[in-house]
Image 1 (tube, rainbow, N blue to C red):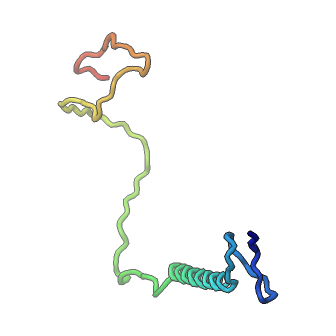
Image 2 (cartoon, helix red, strand yellow):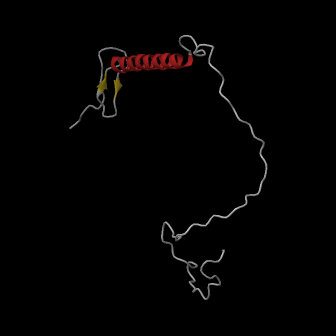
Amino acid sequence: MNYETSVKADTTEPMTTDRYGAVVDDEQPKSRKKTAIIVGAIILALLLLAGAYFAIPAGDPAGADDGESQAPVVTVIAPGQTSVSGTIEVPGQIAARRAMPVGVAGEGGRVVSVPVAAGEWV
């Protein structure tokens, strides 16, 4: 059987086909393109309006309350070094927030001695 694989038109205008060989109307892509351009223009206009809304200040700037209010009092000191004398003694126990293993990862080891007695400064 001999099938004809081409499409012939009555006019001399070229016809557009999709990848399956179906004839595509040339007006449809143009209308989609116009619609996409119009939607893009509307979105751009909205973005410009939103930018102008936030960029341009509105109304009068806020002034002072009544002009009779007093400025806040500020204390200025010069930085320097001083020694702190005194001792604070607090009874209690020191404990870790999280339990952590003591030692070196991989090799391991053991504590041979602790050269500190209870109550000594460390």
